[in-house]
Amino acid sequence: MIRYLGKRILFMIISLFLIITVTFFLMHSIPGGPFTSEKNVPDEIKKSLEAYYGIDKPIGEQYVDYLKRVITWDLGPSFSEKSSTVNDVINRGFPVSAHLGLQAIAIAITGGITLGVIAALRHNKWQDYSAMVIAVLGLSVPSFILAAFYQYFFAIKWGLFPIAKWETFEHTVLPSFALSALPMAFIARLTRSNMIEVLAQDYIKTAKAKGLNTIVITVKHAVRNALLPVITYLGPLTAGILTGTFVIERIFGVPGLGREFVLSITNRDYTVIMGTTVFYSIILIVMVLLVDIAYTIVDPRIKLSDAGKE
Amino acid sequence: MQNNIQLTKELFEPISVDLRQAEEIKRPSLSFWADAWRRLKMNKVAMASLIFIIVLLLCAIFIPILSSNDYFTTDLAGKNKKPSAEHWFGTDDLGRDMFVRVWYGARISLEVGIAAAIVDLIIGIIWGGIAGFYGGKVDEVMMRIADILFAVPYLLVVILLMVVMPPGVGTIIIALTITGWIGMARIVRGQILQLKSQEFVLAARSLGADSKRLIFKHLIPNTLGPIIVTLSLTIPSAIFAESFLSFIGLGVAAPIASWGTMSNEGLPAMKYYPWRLMFPAIFISITMLAFNLLGDGIRDAVDPRLRK
Image 1 (cartoon, chains in turn cyan, blue):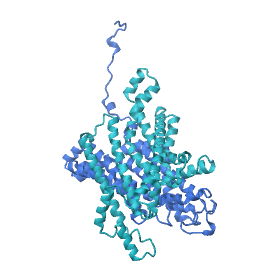
Image 2: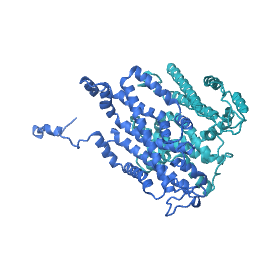
Image 3: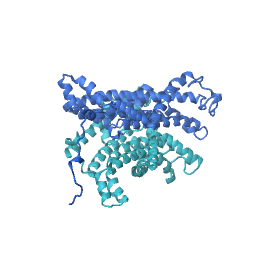
Image 4: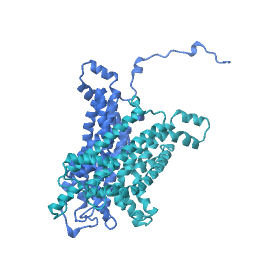
């Protein structure tokens, strides 16, 4: 276990290093520096600006500098917003995104598991079919379309919720639901197929034969085992929620990190793009590792080792 | 225990054993693919999706050629027009005909989806096939490389590449496949690891088949089931990624528009000119739905456990 973990963490570090390196060199392969867009800047000012930001040095030296700064968690200045650094952008945007994301994850997990369990218990009946129709729609309709749809009906037509901005709890409802649709559909499908498999097992028959009622069988025996594989989905779930925030925050005008990221892409604000990519990568890679560890704790049958891998 | 029935010899008679009957095949003999196709045909939802996709493909090819409108001519006097006999889906903010633009968008989405899936397939089969077949050190090194790449967040890499490379369909396909092949490679490798210790491989090997022949003639054809299932689900995810990229402004360059770009342009005008968002949105959703349902159908059809 410890050997395996050590190996995993080593790979994690290699992956991160790779991401930082690739990001750095990709950003520097673009013709023109961050100050080429400014018109009529005298050469001396441009020179001193470049010297100030350290981009007049040879690329190798800049790369080493960048690595050093990333390790000390200093992601550099933002080129389009002169007054703030990338760290400021992340500190400002991430709490909002995390709030939105956690709310969406909560909706996705509760909604998805409920749909999946109902579908499995009523396998091949109308409840099953309608739950799976909802799930396949959730997988097929891109979140930006769903978001626009919500805005059109719930905000413009019926005026139930505010259309955009991020102030009160009411403002968080539509974005959270729009963001949770895809992972909810995924969890529902996963839960359903696991539940169906578990319900066909002998120990469920035993429980029935003992005379336990359906609720006890479902909750205590079936759901518990059916949910195990759902835990493995938590890693990709975080990834989905993170990338989902790029469009959802843009549509609903939520001042989160996802919107900042998309804005930095539009403005070609390279340090922000780099910094945010590195930040997101760390979150995702660490999440996947944590999920793997959590999985072994929850399910003692699974051993994290190289021997059991094949 | 008491038994009132008298068992006499007359009660028993030998059944004539007909050996030919034992050999008789009750069901028509079907190859794996014939059976999969038969089961897919019984699945009405999957067949409807397949027909929809074929119609969509044909329309995407022919409507832009046959239509009297084109996708780039602007008409500022006739901008934001409602759907009418002249412009079936209305016009956009530059007066361009939405109907033709939607079908051009279909071309791009399908092109990206299918091309990305095929590139994933080729790289995945070669990489996974070699790793699984040779095993040992080769497998170790190849799969570690895949693991490291797999840990790199997919959409972030795609976004990064799109920022750096010139916009266009080719760029999107490259960006989507650069880490997209790993899933396929893993599946192929897993299947080949299972298959390669089976007797038919030993038989082929003892008949003198070389590695290339073993991989491509014996092992890969036996893994086609999971490969096709993965392929059928790669297409919608590539279409989805393309529309996502276009939506955040990293898609194809104007005047060409994909469904994602059109949704992006239609969004601010949603309140007053809803058709500008509605048509591309409906098309993405239904296309994704059809591909997902067809993929589910194929998965069920090639799963031997579900055979009836």
